[in-house]
Length: 333
Image (cartoon, rainbow, N blue to C red; front, side):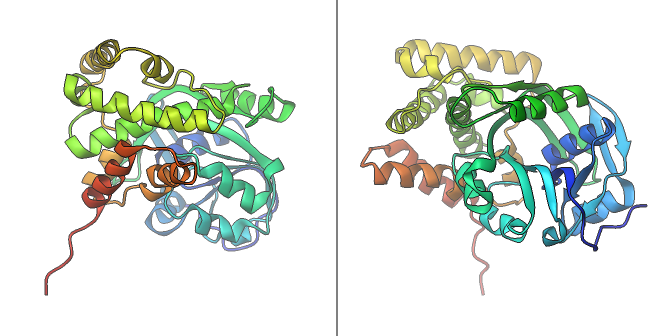
């Protein structure tokens, strides 16, 4: 049994904020590889890790102790901080860490707000871009089911691969996480966001497994139009979309409606054959009664579009709809 740390921590190699599925997967792999890792967690999850360590099943089977800090203000510094929480309340979660000496800060959260928040907390020079095509699900027992290990991309937001980016990517690869050092990081982040918006919006509104709405031509067309609106916003920010995890968003933006729907439904058939029970994490959150990360993702995109006087009617409509779906009904009496 390892108690949650309540004393100041010296500077560590990797500090991971958030011990959900992805934070636990990364923490376990890096710790197994011999890196000095600390998890910043609280509540029931911190208690689980303190009592039983990190337990990963699925693609690998790992069980090992990792230090847990319940008060982030006790962390004095980290060579690399990885933010792996949901996007909700990120600014508040980073606030206690402002006094820490952070060398590199990266976030694997959804949305485009994350890099702005890291820069505000630690300085723009610390920020490294990241997108994760890695997934798992945290079970009520505290075990994490590791289900997808395709690619975790890291890179400078603008410019070529640097030694620090190469070091982070190499550390992840050596630990067993498939990773790539990217020289198109900002395009990677926007493209992942475009794909995520389409998948998240359809998963939450239909409440279906991924293959079901991808295989439906009407739903597929709505998804394509959402991707295209994000694509127009990216272009307005001087970024061209590239390929993204799950969806070839660049091709969807350029193809005819008929061809784009064909692409999406073909992907849906692949999910039906290879991952029939796959659900986007937002749907998992909804069904578990957890809040959805709407304002910090789609809401932020809509706010950007309004400032630029760019019309994004589908994004605006889904922002309202998802807000209604994700809110808990008022209790009578």
